[in-house]
Each structure stands twice: as C-alpha cells, then as structure tokens.
Image (cartoon, rainbow, N blue to C red; front, side, top):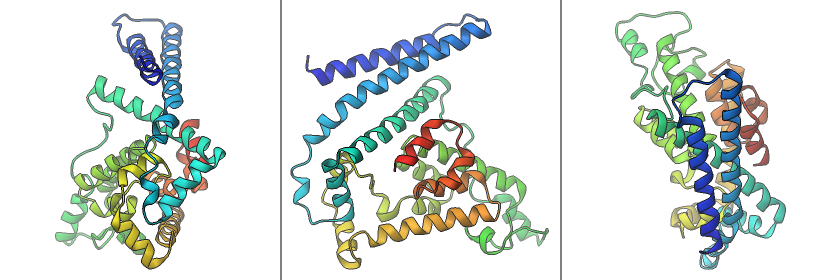
Length: 292
C-alpha cells in the first residue's frame, strides 16, 4: 500500500474509534468518566488531523507545473510565494489543519444530529416583520424606515427585534461555516436566506477561492475573469480594495453596536483581530486568523 494511502487509512481509523467512544455507547456514565471519554475522543480526532497534514504537501506539489504558465495574477503570485517560502508554507498548512478540525466536527454533528447549522431558518434574512410593520405605517423609535441591506448603518437604526434575532442566527451559522473554511457553503446559506448581497460581500471575484494554496489555484484553473480584472486595474489592486472595505465594514458595525457575529464575519475577511477576539470561544479559530 502506498504511504499516503496508509496514512489516510490510519486517519479514518482514528476518526472511527473517536466516534465510537463519543457516540457509540448508550450507557450513562458519571461526570468524570464522561469527561475522560470526551478527552480521549478529541485526542483521537487531533491525531487524525495530524495524519492528514503529513500528506498535504506531497499531494499538492504534483499539481503545480502547468498552472505556472498562466498570465500572472495576485493569486498566482501569492501561491508562488507560499511554495517558495518555508515559513509561509508552514503557516498555510497549520491554517488548513485547524479549519479541517472544525470542518470534521461539523461533519460529525451533521451525521449524529442531522444538521451542523441548527439555528438557521430558511428566508431568515428577509426581515418579514419589519416589512409588514412598514406596510402598515407602524413607526417605532430606532427602527429602520427602508429595507435596503445597509439601512441599519446609514439610518443608525435597527430591524424589529424578531428580524434582528433571525439575522443574528443566520450570521452565527455563517460564522460557524467560515471557521471551518467552508466559504462557499456560507455563501450558499446567505443566498438561500434571501441575502445574495451578503454572499457577494463574502466572495469577491465571482466567488473564486483565493486562498494562497495550490489546491485553490488548480481549482480556479486559468481563470480569464481574474486575469482580465488585474491586467486592467493592476495586480492585487481590487484585492486590496476589498480587504480595506471589509475592514471598514467590521469597524463601522462594531462602533454602532451591531451584531457580534456580523462584526466577526467581516473582521475575519481582513484579519481584524480586534473585532474577532470578542467572539472567539476557543484557541483554534483565533490562531487560524492570526496566521493569515
């Protein structure tokens, strides 16, 4: 058996045993025993994640040669830098490892509970209660008078409490997916909730994965859209503009006491640690975005 296949088989075995320890028994345990079982299950998941990282670099290096021949873009230059710089390469692999850990947890939740974003409600981002109140001519202090997506910001007001609560639930799910590296899934969630504009703010350049990895580079292929944009406006100009815009958004929402998850979602796009810190509940996500 090839070594990469052997390592991946060992990774699957670790995950199977972890799930068996954590979820396979219907017996009731004392608090201390239950805590020890959870710790053992988590250690096995960490061991499985470590196995995956030992195979990532070798598998990616086999996919490089043809892509380098494309016209240069900021994404291509970032990927070339990561491949050439050992420290950057190490940081990227750690980020992918941490996001992989969070992603595996979501998969396990989905398998056991049937859902990994349990607070999400379809069409939760449409502000139905506020819309109904505005149609009836009911006006309350500090309530928005329009339904455009940036009304809370430029009117210094809020949706009705029920709509605001649903918005927070949606953004909490978006945050959960982002910390697991599932940007595309987070954007799909926004679209299905009636907020395609939010998906657009999370996915510049038509939703291309611009992580500086060979995986993303091969997935994008010789993308003519990105090449055309950067040949016209300058290498990296639009990318820097988007980063600056997400930073301004995260700062403005925080200054106006907006939702904590909305603040964190946009702060994560530009590594604005000051606005990410209040929402971090463990070291993994904080460490991930400190490396970006």
